[in-house]
Every structure is written in C-alpha cells, then in structure tokens.
Length: 311
Image 1: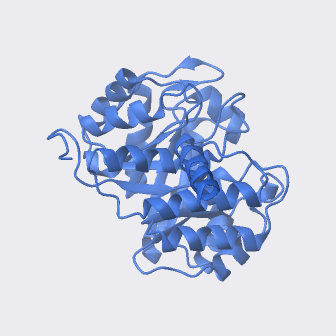
Image 2: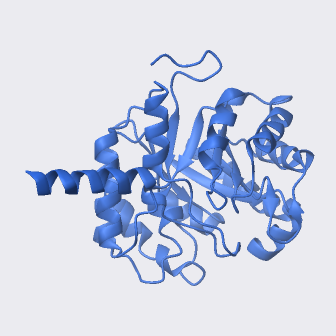
C-alpha cells in the first residue's frame, strides 16, 4: 500500500517499555528479565530504547539496579539507549553507564509539576541547566519530555500556548528531541494537531515526538493525526505496559504492537521486525504475570494458539 502524501514514509519508534512501562510495577522485575527484554528489543531492530532510570530507588524502587542493567545489555550498533536523569547525580550514573541519550523532564501544567516534581515549571527547567551543560560537553544526546501537554488530572485542559512556552525552555537547554506527552491519555486528534501546529510555528517538526497514553482509547487516532501534520517520531510500550503514579486511572502508553500493525498497514517503514515485537510482548507479560494490553498482540497470539490446536 502506498502512503498518503501527507504521511511520513518512515517513522521512528522510541520503545519505552523497559523504563516507563515497568517503573510502576509493584513486584520487582528481576535484572535478568529487564536485560533480556532490552536485548530482544535490540534484536528486533528498535532504533531507540528507553532502558533505565537513574532516579533514586527511594522514589522509584523498580528502577534500582539500572547500572547493572546497562552494564549487562548487549548493545546493537545504531540503537540509542536512553536513560532518565533527574539531576547531576543521575547524570553521573548515566555517564558511567555509557548511555547514548539522557532524558530530562518537566510539565506543561503547573499543578502537575508541583505534584510530580515538587516545584514550578520554571524551577524544574532551571534544575536541568547543569545537567544539559554537562551532557553537551560530553557529547551525549539530550531528550526533553513535557508531561501533561494536553490535559492535567489537577487543572484540566492545558492550553497549546502553555506547551509552547515549555518547549521554548527545553530548546534553550539544547534538547535534541522533545517529547510532547499526553500523560493521562485525554487528548483527541483535533487537540493533538492544535498543540503541534502551535509548536511548529516556531520550531522544526523533526525535533518532536508524540508520547500518547491510551486511557481513553485515542492513541492510534492521535498518532495518525500527528503524522498528518509532520510528526514522525512516536513513543510506545511493548504489550502496552505502564501508567503514571501521579495520574489516577491513566493506563499505559499505546501498545507497540498496535502501532506497528497500523504503520505496516499504511506502508510506513519502521525498520522493526513486527513478528518479533509480538513475541516480545508475550515474553514480558508472561515474565511479569500481566495481561497483554496490546489488542494486536492478543489477537495474533489467539490465532497462533488456534493454529497450533489445528495442527
């Protein structure tokens, strides 16, 4: 199938399952399971994997041992392995772990910033100035992530102009890529386009990615809407793992398998082995005793089971 002229020919998928997907699991996921997950994702051709977080285990217990994870993975040439870094101490851990990219973060909602990182938006960005400066000096890629860019559990709708202001602050820090995140999954396609159009009035589209949660079942429609106006980088989580501890009711990111299925149907390249991704979803849900939140993953697995029974 030929892609529509308004859609990109190729999309970059940032796989966030190993970090964003697993960070809120109550039962600690063993280091070897995390390593195996990342290795399988690497082998499947994912170009960018959010692998770990150098946040204090006191705040995110699931991310304890991130240094061990980074030391044990088998790195695929060309793949970017990203880690979350909240401060200079976290950055030092990322540097020692030989991360390819650090992720710094803020929010487009003042209320969410206060609840999530206990400071204002301006203060949160200010804290990252020394981190960004160090990363630039060390030649490490910087990705900025902006939570609640469409809606906030505490203040409701977030205006596009507010998102644009935080984008400008992130650009001033020297971010190579900036995530526009629908943390609680409330956005609809028109809102997606409105926010990105506001940003693209002063910034290049290739620098931005969509990070959409699927709480209201809008993620695939939102990805399509974002592609129509020039976005070609999207985050997804294998088997739909994840959520947000600060946003009640927020489900995981859109499932990677579902995104890949849609993109494959549109004839859009990703460089990722679709069948391998489905198997990875099966692996991690079995390893963590969770239900697979990917509709595509569940459908294909059920079809395979029927085929096995018929054989």
